[in-house]
Image (cartoon, rainbow, N blue to C red; front, side, top):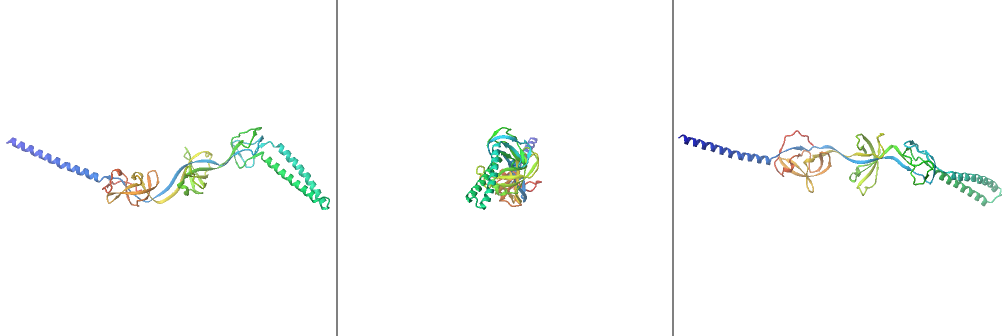
Length: 353
């Protein structure tokens, strides 16, 4: 009797165990299916925001004016006034070449001028009383004009032996000494106007209409943090065919002794600005072969929307078409979501874009 009761008890316990096992398996399977069909995702809501389009390009500082000092004629240097690294005023005599032969010819021409002027004066009196023919008087007048022209030629030739400062500027390093024989190809020194500087740079052709005279920009010297300002003064009237860029020149408006011609710069140029731009996180965009898509949550389901993009910032990308303010954009798990799949939005402390 006891054995029968024991067997019955064992069979009852075994039946309960088997039932519990069968009832547990379907529950787990159903839970797993539900989690797979309704995955939790992070999200954000699109809101219009302010967008400033800024591009960064490289540039180079150049002197406002700069030229090499070279003689117009060959000759021997007899005087030098090239104070290296010093400021000189426009018109200052910097180098003088030998000109004694020209001075002698000029002196001779001046003497001839005085003689012919006296001769013309006497002939003028004689002409009044018919003491000389008109032809002789005209010949003297012609000789007088010829001598005057010779004098002007000698003066020009003498001026060519003088190298003067073409503008206010700073003299660079001197390359000649007194007694040197120089030619028009000899660079005596350089002169630069460093009180003002220019900034040369180029921008891609698609921005050419955005860069106009008066456009403000900021720049830094490479490997420095200080910011300086400049204003666009002019640009080329055509695109460089080799680079597809527009060459631009600006005037530096900031004053600093740290700015030197030849410095390379990083330029920040502000272009278009929009008050109602739609920005989506970069990770929310799904690149396609010929387009881009994002996933929008509508009525708890995933909708794949094709978009066109514009300006790209550090973490966000501007959307030009395809989305509207208020759309809920999925930002995580986008590679595992299928069209029209049910999704579950996580409760996040998020900021709307």
